[in-house]
Image (cartoon, rainbow, N blue to C red):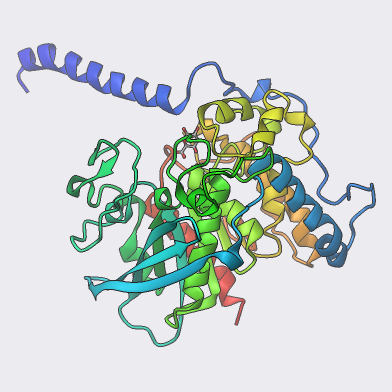
Length: 436
Ligand code: GTR
């Protein structure tokens, strides 16, 4: 390298790289929030094994009949809201509109139309099945952020007509050809199919567009325009979870899928959604949240990274209105996020964090899943030693635990990578092998 090049160009180049990194850091870790473990306030978690009446919960029957319904009710009432769609009045029509072979398996595209006396809502499901199927296959079900055509460069995938948040390949909130495959690094279809799993995905914005319009569009249209949002009416996370359950209904009509091995997973806001769907819909066999953070797996009382006030301010449509009561009043809430995770028990649950994703509080996510062990123990599960080791405010990046519940801390930023998928598949294999 010529020295003049080194002198003139390299400082500029390093400056650009540094600026990009600083920019990413600022975006990932907004200023004015706590990222320092020593500043986490003292807090007490709501007890999972103590009923509202004060009664100690000491058996799985008491958990199932008393405490689980109480926690579910509190989460509906105070956090995510109640779903108001009258399922019995909704007509559902499903049609296969396209299918073909790909390098790794078969692609099928379905159009699912929900109609009420007021409106129709269309949800496009993209399905991949492994090449050879000898018996019904287990599958991953997850919503995507910018349309089905972003999960693979596959030219046949239908482009959504719904409203999309700004991003690559999006013009005036409309998806275009340029977006094809732009999220493919987050969906390792080859790894999924070659391990014998199917994949079902759909665009979350077809269920409810992700902006605050006072709950008028998406599935809220099924309820008519005169409806009023109550303090405990479901928000968008609840709407997306409703969509996941409707996709579970769809999967139940497909002979290629093993209905007892439906895995629901999601990243970030869709990780919060996967947990809420898994909590409510017990047909979901295994739940995975990836970097779900505040309002997902992370303990809110820690006030580490994103806070309840910030999330309710930036995204006033995600939760029910009641949730704003806990802005800067985390300790007043009758539940915390470990309560949400506890509702997955005794089904396998996996929480995935990333070491640089401090906004989502990786350690708070770890503490939260660890807390649920008490509920799994009611079902007789024995836990590996690593969960009882006192890890002083840290889990080493690269660590992964597999068992009835699992956790990993990937090295790196807020994202979903093939490394994450490898761990998800290992976790599913471990738990599903015990189902036989
Ligand atoms: C962030 C939000 C997080 C997370 C993330 C995402 O802006 O603060 O809670 O949900 O968005 O979903 O990408």
